[in-house]
Image (cartoon, rainbow, N blue to C red; front, side, top):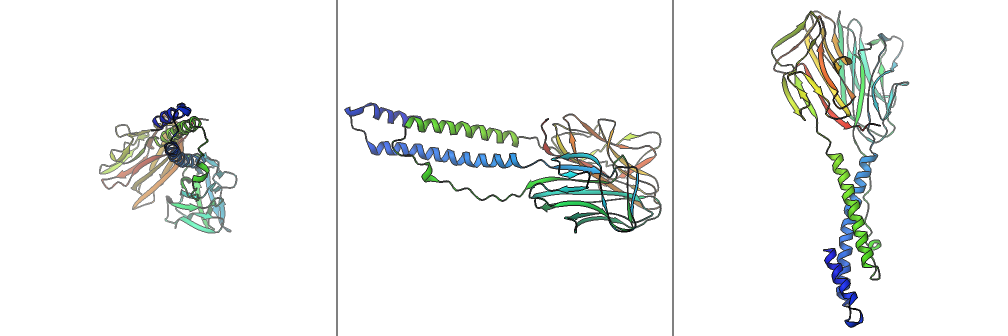
Length: 378
Protein backbone atom coordinates (compact mmCIF):
# COMPACT_ATOMS: atom_id res chain seq x y z
CA UNK A 1 0.00 0.00 0.00
CA UNK A 2 2.89 2.39 0.81
CA UNK A 3 4.18 2.83 -2.81
CA UNK A 4 0.69 3.73 -4.10
CA UNK A 5 0.19 6.26 -1.34
CA UNK A 6 3.59 7.73 -2.03
CA UNK A 7 2.78 8.22 -5.74
CA UNK A 8 -0.47 9.95 -4.86
CA UNK A 9 1.23 12.25 -2.41
CA UNK A 10 4.10 13.05 -4.75
CA UNK A 11 1.58 13.83 -7.48
CA UNK A 12 -0.19 16.26 -5.20
CA UNK A 13 3.07 17.95 -4.24
CA UNK A 14 4.25 18.24 -7.90
CA UNK A 15 1.11 20.18 -8.89
CA UNK A 16 2.40 23.01 -6.72
CA UNK A 17 0.35 26.19 -6.79
CA UNK A 18 -1.51 25.09 -9.93
CA UNK A 19 -3.83 23.05 -7.73
CA UNK A 20 -4.32 23.40 -3.98
CA UNK A 21 -3.13 20.45 -1.88
CA UNK A 22 -5.85 18.53 -0.04
CA UNK A 23 -4.39 18.51 3.50
CA UNK A 24 -6.93 15.96 4.71
CA UNK A 25 -5.81 13.49 2.02
CA UNK A 26 -2.19 14.22 2.85
CA UNK A 27 -2.83 13.61 6.56
CA UNK A 28 -4.74 10.38 5.87
CA UNK A 29 -1.99 9.04 3.60
CA UNK A 30 0.70 9.92 6.12
CA UNK A 31 -1.27 8.30 8.94
CA UNK A 32 -1.56 5.09 6.88
CA UNK A 33 2.20 5.08 6.44
CA UNK A 34 2.68 5.64 10.15
CA UNK A 35 0.27 2.82 11.04
CA UNK A 36 2.18 0.50 8.70
CA UNK A 37 5.45 1.59 10.30
CA UNK A 38 4.12 1.06 13.84
CA UNK A 39 2.93 -2.45 12.97
CA UNK A 40 6.33 -3.34 11.53
CA UNK A 41 8.05 -1.73 14.53
CA UNK A 42 5.99 -3.81 16.94
CA UNK A 43 6.76 -7.03 15.04
CA UNK A 44 10.44 -6.08 14.88
CA UNK A 45 10.52 -5.24 18.58
CA UNK A 46 9.02 -8.61 19.53
CA UNK A 47 11.25 -10.54 17.11
CA UNK A 48 14.42 -8.77 18.25
CA UNK A 49 13.59 -9.29 21.93
CA UNK A 50 12.93 -12.99 21.31
CA UNK A 51 16.15 -13.32 19.32
CA UNK A 52 18.07 -11.53 22.10
CA UNK A 53 16.58 -13.88 24.69
CA UNK A 54 17.47 -16.96 22.60
CA UNK A 55 21.00 -15.72 21.96
CA UNK A 56 21.61 -14.77 25.59
CA UNK A 57 20.35 -18.08 27.01
CA UNK A 58 23.58 -19.98 27.65
CA UNK A 59 24.18 -23.52 26.47
CA UNK A 60 24.75 -25.53 29.65
CA UNK A 61 25.50 -29.27 29.83
CA UNK A 62 27.96 -31.25 31.93
CA UNK A 63 28.85 -34.86 32.59
CA UNK A 64 31.61 -36.16 34.84
CA UNK A 65 32.63 -39.36 36.58
CA UNK A 66 34.55 -39.95 39.79
CA UNK A 67 37.33 -41.56 37.78
CA UNK A 68 40.32 -42.93 39.63
CA UNK A 69 40.61 -46.65 40.08
CA UNK A 70 39.01 -47.92 43.23
CA UNK A 71 36.87 -47.29 46.25
CA UNK A 72 35.89 -44.05 47.99
CA UNK A 73 34.73 -44.69 51.54
CA UNK A 74 33.53 -42.43 54.38
CA UNK A 75 33.71 -43.75 57.95
CA UNK A 76 34.04 -40.55 60.01
CA UNK A 77 31.58 -38.06 58.59
CA UNK A 78 30.11 -37.11 55.24
CA UNK A 79 32.47 -36.55 52.33
CA UNK A 80 32.05 -34.32 49.27
CA UNK A 81 32.46 -36.30 46.04
CA UNK A 82 34.74 -34.71 43.45
CA UNK A 83 33.99 -35.96 39.95
CA UNK A 84 37.33 -35.27 38.27
CA UNK A 85 36.92 -37.14 34.95
CA UNK A 86 35.14 -34.65 32.69
CA UNK A 87 33.16 -35.99 29.75
CA UNK A 88 31.29 -32.78 28.88
CA UNK A 89 31.32 -29.23 30.29
CA UNK A 90 29.61 -26.92 27.82
CA UNK A 91 29.25 -23.53 29.46
CA UNK A 92 31.87 -24.26 32.14
CA UNK A 93 29.31 -24.38 34.97
CA UNK A 94 30.79 -27.53 36.55
CA UNK A 95 33.99 -27.13 38.61
CA UNK A 96 36.10 -30.31 38.54
CA UNK A 97 38.23 -28.99 41.42
CA UNK A 98 35.34 -28.55 43.88
CA UNK A 99 32.82 -31.02 42.41
CA UNK A 100 30.15 -28.30 42.33
CA UNK A 101 27.79 -27.29 39.55
CA UNK A 102 26.67 -23.64 39.71
CA UNK A 103 23.52 -22.60 37.83
CA UNK A 104 24.47 -19.66 35.58
CA UNK A 105 20.87 -18.44 35.16
CA UNK A 106 17.44 -19.01 36.68
CA UNK A 107 15.85 -21.99 34.95
CA UNK A 108 14.84 -25.63 34.95
CA UNK A 109 17.75 -28.09 34.82
CA UNK A 110 17.73 -31.87 34.41
CA UNK A 111 20.16 -33.44 36.91
CA UNK A 112 21.07 -37.12 37.06
CA UNK A 113 23.62 -39.32 38.84
CA UNK A 114 24.60 -42.99 38.98
CA UNK A 115 26.48 -44.77 41.78
CA UNK A 116 28.23 -48.15 41.73
CA UNK A 117 29.94 -50.07 44.55
CA UNK A 118 30.59 -53.57 45.89
CA UNK A 119 27.50 -54.83 47.71
CA UNK A 120 29.34 -55.87 50.90
CA UNK A 121 28.95 -52.39 52.48
CA UNK A 122 26.28 -49.65 52.29
CA UNK A 123 26.47 -47.42 49.19
CA UNK A 124 25.28 -43.81 48.82
CA UNK A 125 25.33 -40.77 46.55
CA UNK A 126 23.31 -37.76 47.76
CA UNK A 127 22.57 -34.58 45.79
CA UNK A 128 22.74 -31.40 47.90
CA UNK A 129 21.72 -27.86 46.94
CA UNK A 130 23.58 -24.93 48.49
CA UNK A 131 25.39 -27.27 50.93
CA UNK A 132 22.46 -28.26 53.16
CA UNK A 133 19.29 -29.06 51.23
CA UNK A 134 18.96 -32.68 50.11
CA UNK A 135 17.42 -32.92 46.63
CA UNK A 136 17.82 -36.57 45.60
CA UNK A 137 19.49 -39.74 46.88
CA UNK A 138 20.70 -43.12 45.70
CA UNK A 139 21.28 -45.52 48.60
CA UNK A 140 21.73 -49.28 48.86
CA UNK A 141 22.07 -51.54 51.89
CA UNK A 142 24.61 -54.41 51.86
CA UNK A 143 23.53 -57.43 49.85
CA UNK A 144 26.38 -59.89 50.17
CA UNK A 145 28.74 -60.61 47.30
CA UNK A 146 28.70 -58.82 43.97
CA UNK A 147 28.06 -55.13 43.22
CA UNK A 148 25.17 -52.69 43.12
CA UNK A 149 24.27 -49.81 40.81
CA UNK A 150 21.69 -47.15 41.68
CA UNK A 151 20.69 -43.93 39.97
CA UNK A 152 18.32 -41.01 40.35
CA UNK A 153 17.40 -37.86 38.47
CA UNK A 154 14.88 -35.05 38.23
CA UNK A 155 14.08 -31.69 36.61
CA UNK A 156 14.96 -29.05 39.21
CA UNK A 157 14.11 -25.35 39.35
CA UNK A 158 17.34 -23.49 40.18
CA UNK A 159 18.03 -19.82 40.82
CA UNK A 160 21.10 -18.18 39.31
CA UNK A 161 24.01 -19.02 41.60
CA UNK A 162 22.45 -22.13 43.17
CA UNK A 163 25.13 -24.78 43.76
CA UNK A 164 24.71 -28.55 43.45
CA UNK A 165 27.15 -31.16 44.73
CA UNK A 166 27.22 -34.89 45.44
CA UNK A 167 27.93 -36.15 48.97
CA UNK A 168 28.97 -39.57 50.27
CA UNK A 169 27.27 -40.17 53.59
CA UNK A 170 29.22 -41.49 56.54
CA UNK A 171 29.61 -45.29 56.74
CA UNK A 172 28.94 -45.72 53.01
CA UNK A 173 31.07 -46.22 49.91
CA UNK A 174 31.14 -45.65 46.14
CA UNK A 175 33.40 -47.03 43.40
CA UNK A 176 34.59 -46.01 39.94
CA UNK A 177 37.36 -46.46 37.42
CA UNK A 178 38.23 -45.10 33.97
CA UNK A 179 35.12 -46.74 32.46
CA UNK A 180 32.79 -44.21 34.20
CA UNK A 181 30.54 -46.35 36.41
CA UNK A 182 29.69 -43.54 38.86
CA UNK A 183 28.61 -40.36 37.12
CA UNK A 184 27.09 -36.91 37.75
CA UNK A 185 25.51 -34.94 34.91
CA UNK A 186 22.95 -32.32 33.99
CA UNK A 187 21.82 -29.73 31.49
CA UNK A 188 19.64 -26.62 31.18
CA UNK A 189 16.18 -27.47 29.84
CA UNK A 190 14.94 -23.86 29.58
CA UNK A 191 15.42 -20.48 31.21
CA UNK A 192 12.87 -18.90 33.56
CA UNK A 193 13.94 -15.26 33.33
CA UNK A 194 11.07 -12.90 34.10
CA UNK A 195 11.00 -10.00 31.66
CA UNK A 196 8.50 -7.16 32.08
CA UNK A 197 6.50 -6.39 28.94
CA UNK A 198 7.84 -3.47 26.98
CA UNK A 199 5.23 -0.81 26.21
CA UNK A 200 5.19 0.74 22.79
CA UNK A 201 5.30 4.55 22.87
CA UNK A 202 2.96 5.50 20.05
CA UNK A 203 3.44 9.24 20.58
CA UNK A 204 7.21 8.96 20.18
CA UNK A 205 6.67 7.19 16.86
CA UNK A 206 4.34 9.81 15.43
CA UNK A 207 5.82 12.13 12.88
CA UNK A 208 4.64 15.56 12.11
CA UNK A 209 3.30 16.55 8.69
CA UNK A 210 6.63 18.21 7.92
CA UNK A 211 8.54 14.91 7.94
CA UNK A 212 9.67 13.96 4.47
CA UNK A 213 7.54 11.25 2.90
CA UNK A 214 10.60 9.88 1.13
CA UNK A 215 12.45 9.56 4.45
CA UNK A 216 9.46 7.79 6.02
CA UNK A 217 9.35 5.27 3.19
CA UNK A 218 13.11 4.71 3.50
CA UNK A 219 12.73 4.08 7.23
CA UNK A 220 9.92 1.60 6.55
CA UNK A 221 12.10 -0.19 4.03
CA UNK A 222 14.94 -0.39 6.56
CA UNK A 223 12.64 -1.78 9.24
CA UNK A 224 11.28 -4.37 6.82
CA UNK A 225 14.82 -5.46 5.91
CA UNK A 226 15.77 -5.80 9.59
CA UNK A 227 12.52 -7.64 10.28
CA UNK A 228 13.13 -10.10 7.45
CA UNK A 229 16.71 -10.64 8.61
CA UNK A 230 15.71 -11.19 12.25
CA UNK A 231 12.83 -13.54 11.41
CA UNK A 232 15.11 -15.45 9.02
CA UNK A 233 17.72 -15.93 11.76
CA UNK A 234 15.03 -17.09 14.19
CA UNK A 235 13.77 -19.56 11.59
CA UNK A 236 17.29 -20.96 11.18
CA UNK A 237 17.51 -21.52 14.93
CA UNK A 238 14.09 -23.16 15.03
CA UNK A 239 14.92 -25.45 12.09
CA UNK A 240 17.38 -27.53 14.14
CA UNK A 241 16.52 -31.19 13.43
CA UNK A 242 14.39 -33.06 15.95
CA UNK A 243 16.37 -36.12 17.10
CA UNK A 244 15.18 -38.64 19.70
CA UNK A 245 15.31 -42.42 19.93
CA UNK A 246 14.38 -45.12 22.45
CA UNK A 247 14.85 -48.84 21.83
CA UNK A 248 15.00 -52.10 23.76
CA UNK A 249 16.75 -55.41 23.12
CA UNK A 250 13.39 -57.13 22.93
CA UNK A 251 13.28 -60.85 22.29
CA UNK A 252 12.49 -63.17 25.16
CA UNK A 253 15.54 -64.32 27.03
CA UNK A 254 19.24 -64.05 27.72
CA UNK A 255 22.06 -62.66 25.59
CA UNK A 256 25.38 -64.08 26.77
CA UNK A 257 28.91 -64.04 25.43
CA UNK A 258 31.85 -66.18 26.59
CA UNK A 259 34.20 -65.79 23.63
CA UNK A 260 34.70 -62.10 22.99
CA UNK A 261 32.67 -58.90 23.18
CA UNK A 262 29.40 -58.63 21.27
CA UNK A 263 27.58 -55.62 19.77
CA UNK A 264 24.07 -55.36 21.19
CA UNK A 265 21.33 -54.88 18.58
CA UNK A 266 18.27 -53.19 20.10
CA UNK A 267 15.50 -54.42 17.78
CA UNK A 268 12.36 -53.08 19.48
CA UNK A 269 12.09 -49.46 18.35
CA UNK A 270 9.80 -47.35 20.54
CA UNK A 271 10.86 -43.94 19.21
CA UNK A 272 13.10 -42.94 16.30
CA UNK A 273 12.45 -39.30 15.41
CA UNK A 274 14.99 -38.21 12.84
CA UNK A 275 15.89 -41.83 11.97
CA UNK A 276 19.37 -41.52 13.50
CA UNK A 277 19.19 -44.99 15.09
CA UNK A 278 19.72 -48.06 12.85
CA UNK A 279 17.97 -51.14 14.23
CA UNK A 280 19.96 -53.38 11.86
CA UNK A 281 23.39 -52.36 13.21
CA UNK A 282 22.40 -51.13 16.68
CA UNK A 283 24.18 -47.83 16.05
CA UNK A 284 23.07 -44.26 16.65
CA UNK A 285 24.73 -41.73 14.32
CA UNK A 286 24.75 -38.06 15.29
CA UNK A 287 23.24 -36.08 12.38
CA UNK A 288 24.77 -32.75 13.47
CA UNK A 289 27.41 -31.47 15.87
CA UNK A 290 25.83 -30.90 19.28
CA UNK A 291 25.20 -32.06 22.83
CA UNK A 292 23.09 -35.22 23.13
CA UNK A 293 21.66 -36.87 26.25
CA UNK A 294 22.30 -40.63 26.11
CA UNK A 295 20.99 -43.18 28.61
CA UNK A 296 20.83 -46.97 28.90
CA UNK A 297 19.54 -49.59 31.35
CA UNK A 298 20.60 -53.24 31.66
CA UNK A 299 18.85 -56.11 33.42
CA UNK A 300 19.99 -59.73 33.95
CA UNK A 301 19.89 -62.60 36.43
CA UNK A 302 22.43 -62.00 39.22
CA UNK A 303 24.07 -65.44 38.98
CA UNK A 304 26.56 -64.25 36.33
CA UNK A 305 28.31 -60.93 35.57
CA UNK A 306 26.19 -58.36 33.69
CA UNK A 307 27.39 -55.55 31.41
CA UNK A 308 26.28 -52.88 28.96
CA UNK A 309 29.05 -50.60 27.66
CA UNK A 310 28.60 -47.48 25.53
CA UNK A 311 31.24 -47.11 22.81
CA UNK A 312 31.86 -44.13 20.53
CA UNK A 313 33.16 -44.71 17.00
CA UNK A 314 33.87 -48.35 17.67
CA UNK A 315 36.63 -48.11 20.26
CA UNK A 316 36.19 -45.29 22.80
CA UNK A 317 34.37 -46.25 26.02
CA UNK A 318 32.01 -43.46 27.12
CA UNK A 319 29.91 -45.03 29.92
CA UNK A 320 29.33 -48.43 31.49
CA UNK A 321 26.82 -50.38 33.56
CA UNK A 322 28.42 -53.48 35.07
CA UNK A 323 27.42 -55.83 37.89
CA UNK A 324 29.29 -58.74 39.51
CA UNK A 325 27.36 -61.91 40.44
CA UNK A 326 25.29 -61.58 43.60
CA UNK A 327 23.56 -64.94 43.99
CA UNK A 328 19.90 -65.53 43.24
CA UNK A 329 17.55 -62.92 41.82
CA UNK A 330 18.22 -60.24 39.20
CA UNK A 331 20.05 -56.94 38.88
CA UNK A 332 19.27 -53.70 37.06
CA UNK A 333 21.86 -51.01 36.35
CA UNK A 334 21.74 -47.83 34.31
CA UNK A 335 23.91 -44.90 33.31
CA UNK A 336 23.56 -41.72 31.28
CA UNK A 337 25.21 -38.41 30.46
CA UNK A 338 25.11 -35.36 28.21
CA UNK A 339 27.76 -36.00 25.54
CA UNK A 340 29.33 -33.67 22.98
CA UNK A 341 29.18 -35.41 19.60
CA UNK A 342 30.49 -34.41 16.18
CA UNK A 343 28.35 -34.94 13.08
CA UNK A 344 28.81 -38.56 12.06
CA UNK A 345 29.94 -39.84 15.48
CA UNK A 346 28.56 -43.34 16.08
CA UNK A 347 27.37 -44.76 19.40
CA UNK A 348 26.66 -48.41 20.11
CA UNK A 349 26.20 -50.69 23.11
CA UNK A 350 28.54 -53.64 23.66
CA UNK A 351 28.24 -56.75 25.82
CA UNK A 352 31.66 -57.58 27.24
CA UNK A 353 32.99 -61.14 27.15
CA UNK A 354 31.91 -63.40 30.01
CA UNK A 355 28.87 -61.24 30.80
CA UNK A 356 25.15 -61.36 30.06
CA UNK A 357 22.07 -59.17 29.61
CA UNK A 358 18.35 -59.99 29.50
CA UNK A 359 15.17 -58.55 28.06
CA UNK A 360 11.68 -59.41 26.92
CA UNK A 361 8.73 -57.58 25.39
CA UNK A 362 8.38 -55.44 28.54
CA UNK A 363 11.56 -53.47 27.70
CA UNK A 364 13.81 -54.08 30.72
CA UNK A 365 17.07 -53.37 28.84
CA UNK A 366 16.92 -50.11 26.90
CA UNK A 367 19.08 -47.62 24.98
CA UNK A 368 17.86 -44.06 24.33
CA UNK A 369 18.92 -40.49 23.64
CA UNK A 370 18.00 -37.11 22.20
CA UNK A 371 19.57 -33.91 20.88
CA UNK A 372 19.73 -31.20 23.56
CA UNK A 373 21.13 -28.41 21.38
CA UNK A 374 23.41 -27.91 18.35
CA UNK A 375 26.92 -26.63 18.94
CA UNK A 376 28.79 -24.76 16.24
CA UNK A 377 32.54 -25.36 15.95
CA UNK A 378 34.61 -22.64 17.60
